[in-house]
Image (cartoon, rainbow, N blue to C red; front, side, top):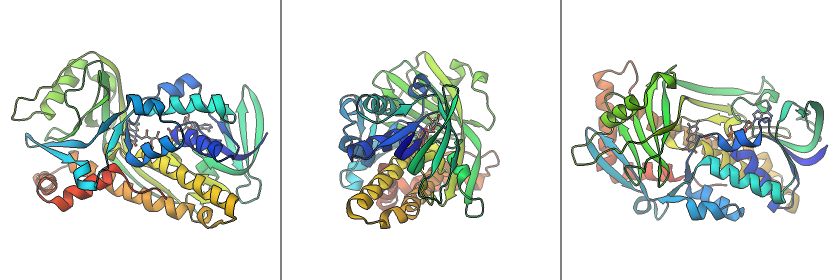
Length: 391
Ligand SMILES: Cc1cc2nc3c(=O)[nH]c(=O)nc-3n(C[C@H](O)[C@H](O)[C@H](O)COP(=O)(O)OP(=O)(O)OC[C@H]3O[C@@H](n4cnc5c(N)ncnc54)[C@H](O)[C@@H]3O)c2cc1C
């Protein structure tokens, strides 16, 4: 098999890249190790930055998002039983975010790819990438029990944190920056209308809580839990009781409860692999970097990487200008490190570490107090949350 761009992975990064390339008249093949139903069901991100929304529109992949997505002009911070709303458009000159689940983004992009785009092979597992330093890199893969080779001009590893593409980066050139956190998120989906019309981020002495939503009738909520927690250890009532405690305020606000339909635990990690390019092998999305979900950046970073790659490849093909392809890693990493900074700051401001001292608690409260009283601090949060420019 032969193509211009071999894409490993049909998460948001791989699917959007295939779509952007198709719109630019560049052919690609997407290899995805799982089946379609699995990819379309996997519950993950839900907050789309303004730039992500704009890109999906430009890619002709926004019809359902524009109908069903929920535009949000702010978030609420809760701490010490107080509430503070951060008003995004007022602080950023009109920017906002949209709540639209990653599963739905993927469903939309899969449907478009199968209807109009190049090959998208499910249950096609990439086994190894070879020849990154040559003009013709190759992906060895297994599909329907048969091994095959995809010959490409470029390979883009969009295969997530556990994928194979990153292992093709020479060890001598690779640098890894990493931090794990001694806690994770217990996330639920519940069939009950959200109790607040914007996301609520709560810092509490018992730990962090996030109240979010998937739709006007489905609540998404998260609790900070100790590392290694099994979701099955928590009954539904215990989860609602704990959310009640951590989200409590001094006013009349009440949390609405409903049947829990899904429950899982996500570990928290910050991770960056540098560089993001070697020869004709490019890494994009979670294959190159992970952020803790507190800043809602993972999906948006994946989008940023593939936009940078697609624009760079178009510039090369149309104008013979290779400078943007050469700068791919540096361009992406500048944005990635801003997202790492913001995600780390949100995580450490809102979560309670197991060894937190009264001094640490006071510092967290002072950081929150600063955001609620100093416009410069609040603006920094609003600008970072709504997203960094795409190059
Ligand atoms: C609970 C949770 C909540 C989150 N919330 C947010 C949020 O609100 N906002 C946000 O922006 N981000 C959020 N994220 C992060 C976001 O989901 C990820 O950053 C995003 O999925 C990254 O997309 P990706 O395409 O790079 O990787 P992935 O979505 O991981 O996709 C990689 C794909 O590659 C496939 N693959 C792997 N290995 C191979 C192989 N060898 N061959 C072929 N295919 C392979 C996988 O099956 C997968 O389909 C959240 C994540 C979690 C877990």
